[in-house]
Amino acid sequence: MSIPFRRCCYPVPLLLMLLLLLSGCNSGQSQQPLQAGSSRANAQRLLQQSEQQLITARTLHAVVNIQIDGETYQGAVTSEIWRAAPAKSRSQILRSTLSEFPAGELTISNGEKLWIYNPARHIVYTGSIASQSNQGGSALFGSSSSPANQLTLNLIDPIFSQSRASLTSQSITIDGHSATVVHVSSQQSATSGPDYSGDVYLDRSSNLPLKLVLNLQGFAEVTLQLPTLELNRPLADSLFNFTPPANVQVAPLLQASATPTSGTLTLGQAEQLAGYHLLSIPSSQSAYQLEGVDILTTSSGQIFVLHYLKGDQSFSILEGKALANEPLPSGTTLTLRGTTAIYSASSDNPTLAWKEHGLGIRISGDLDEQEALAIANLLT
Image (tube, rainbow, N blue to C red):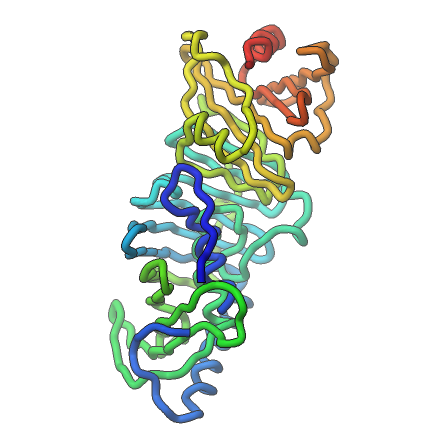
């Protein structure tokens, strides 16, 4: 079975990959399961009991280590996650060898507002959460707006609810905890995605997961470890609020379902991914330096964010077909590039917005009206 992989500047778009890999579909070798039919019933019961504890927990605190070992894709990421029901979450990437998940990236939701802070790029994306019913997420790890959360929930959620399961005869100790080993494999009735098989290690005393080892056929072996997993412990409200540090750029997150890629695309790579020309400042304007391009993936499409520096001044140009469907902000009406534009200084992040050739375009940063207009008129 061939799987269509899209690509940015990374070897594999990992989140989409794992979602496809685990959303459906049985092969692979692991610990031998017991043959008795009761083994399957007991294994399913243990998985269901473990999942139920996670679903009904009022709070959750976890440290998650993910190791990916494949022929063409390898790396590791460690994140720390906090969640408070019904909709508060916080996650921070502690260590990473994967460019998609830069160390230090922080994602926080207080249930009404979302912040995604990338300290390496000195930028905070922020926006309101319009509708909880439309937010992807997990009873285990909360908001899927965090890439690390999305990776974790894509790995774990289907294993508990969609796998064939049986107990194995193996006894094992993990980090001092005696573990029950449940062999899992993809459902035979699934129609999409390649096969997976592997083992889930459940703490014998608490029945909570300690470790998962999955062979994702055609991709890699993925090991997920939970050295810390605490349920129903008090969590401070301050964990779920965020004040952007001084001297960082604050950029709008147009929809709370949007998740920015965190690696740096070149302008050429971004245009290849977009399939159309992106307006940018000509390289002949040497005072302006293009730092790189990020992507916001929203429910209505992709928005490309070009990050610029001029001396010690930073600003961003957001553009894309998805932005053309967004209303212009309220503010001062201007004539720009043969169309109507709006300059809005009502927030901490002044914005010049207009629509051109089927694209929505916004220049956002600490710019006054004349500075923003000057930049807009440079774009080609």
